[in-house]
Image (tube, rainbow, N blue to C red; front, side, top):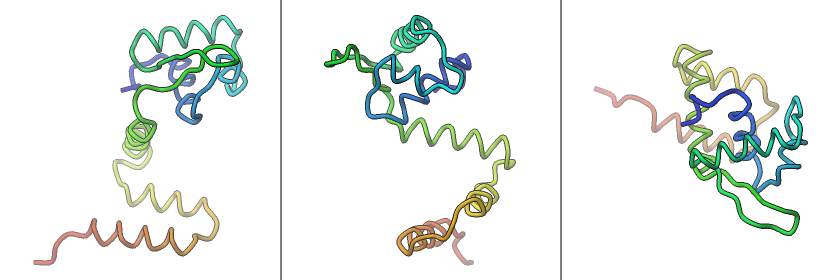
Length: 124
């Protein structure tokens, strides 16, 4: 969905996916390498024209939101990361992610155990 976007448009879109709604100013502030206000507005307009962003009037100006669900975008981004850096192995990616985190909460462990059970191949 967003794979074909230019780098800066993708970055703006990803900022929007991490927020419930954002103004051009808040998007600009969240960018790792800030752009001018007019450049951010231009990128938001391009994303709107592509049908990826919707805008509505808010008390502080226009508020922008991603049109696709953030979970859908996240799933696609995660799949690309797993394919690119872990040769398509979800297990390798999960191992790397778990190595980066601290201790897991009991409910997180239970959720992971359920997913592992569901992912097992049926015994012959």
